[in-house]
Amino acid sequence: MPELRIDPFPSAAELSTLWSAAWDAPAPRDFTPILSRSLAHIGAYHGDRLVGFVNVAWDGGIHAFLLDTSVHPDMRRQGIATRLVREATRVAQERGAEWLHVDFEPHLTGFYRACGFKPTEAGLIKLA
Image (cartoon, rainbow, N blue to C red):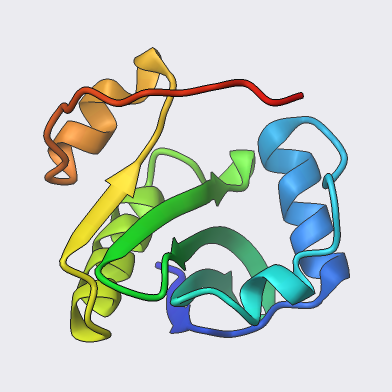
């Protein structure tokens, strides 16, 4: 079972490799400046290899937001994403967040409900 690490600050190369495999697309940017402003981020490591990741962004107050939950395709269906989300939830609460938000595609509804998220109404504007 992979080891979870809190705030591991993975290299741009590590995140790019995971992102490309998990999302079947090149990483959109260097995450280094993003992670420095995050409430937390959690990495799942199999040995020294980053195999899972989730970022917890926040508003500087009581709201935190799960972003970029990713698991390498070779490591899926082992509970890694669930462990990442639960650890991110624990750390966000420990660091003062009172609300944890997540947006997801419809096919992930069951996963996020199993992680404790409740459905809500929200609004969205596409800016680009």
